[in-house]
Image (cartoon, rainbow, N blue to C red):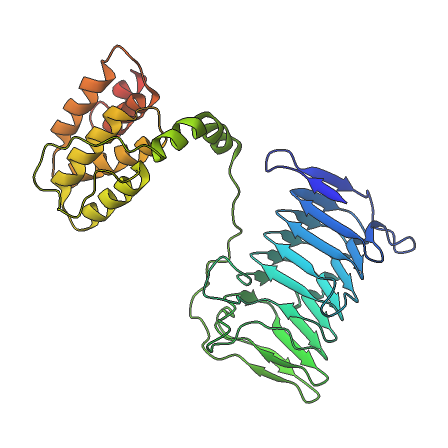
Amino acid sequence: LDVNGTSSNKVTFDFVSKNSSTQNGIKLNYYAEANIDHAIIKNAYRGIWAYRSDLELTNSEIFNCTYGLYFNITEPGGNDGLVTNNHIHNCSSRGIYSYYSNGDYSHNQILNNGYAGIYFYGFGNQNMAPDDNNSQSTGHNKITGSYLGVKVYHANPNLGRVNCIDYGGYNHIDCSTDMRLENNSHVYAHKNYWGSSLYYQAWSGSTLDHSYELSSPPATNMIQGDSPEEQAFDSQFTPQLSKANNSTELLEVSTSSIPSSYNKSWPLEWKLLYARNLKRTKKYSAVIEMCKDIIAKYPDSSYSYLALDLLHQSYVQTKGKTQFGKFVEKNANRKAKKDIYGMAELLLAMDSKEDRVTQLNN
């Protein structure tokens, strides 16, 4: 099953009403494979039921089900679940139920589910923590509004361990009972945020290591895909951007303040990264000359918008708004009209306090 929605055109599976007899929903049976992206799944008994099968679920929403996502015996070393950047909410029993199953969970919002946000039952490779120091890898889930945040029964899910191999989970878990562990479950949960204080229960030989607790919520926001406007912009400017990035045309700079380490043969992107670093070290005059030259030579490249931003910021830092105004006026009055010159006029208008509306109307 391949579901390929987009951020502005999601694929919707509406099962109308939950049915415990037929247990309606999307069912993946033996050795099935499913890649579901940008979907809405609602009003099912089990939103997705995966039995010994592979599932990759991304950028999707599951709500108003009994179980949002139900993994059933995905075999160690074989079938897995990859669950990234989803919103699973308002399911009456469990947001995610993992029964002797594997799964990697990152950047999910698991909110306001009835009994448990996530329930791990039985051994499996269950991972809610990064496997390296990359903030975009596994972990960074937010689980709130359920009776139990994470329920663990005879399982050892990874919620983060601080040593030379694993890193903290950076999950945000804040429920009536944040974690409940039963039947010899042993869990590492380093570097997670538990709200005002952690409340957990460890029964029947279970242990929880919750060292290095975070004092404030980590960045558990979902990773946002490009908006339709961004996609339209990228499709329009891709040819020019590629051409500009590969260009070896020399920049003509008119100041001696640029450090000797600057290399005129760098691609355009490198030059702009260099200019940004110069701005951080307050070498504003060098940044101004470099960015003015980039805009003049590559007005159709999306990289020039970064140059314009750096140019404007550098003029503001040197109290050179009048000079920025002269630069904008000179380019806006050119015979060849360019979108970037309109953007420059908008920046100039926003600097004005007295006649901002008039300038924006113009």
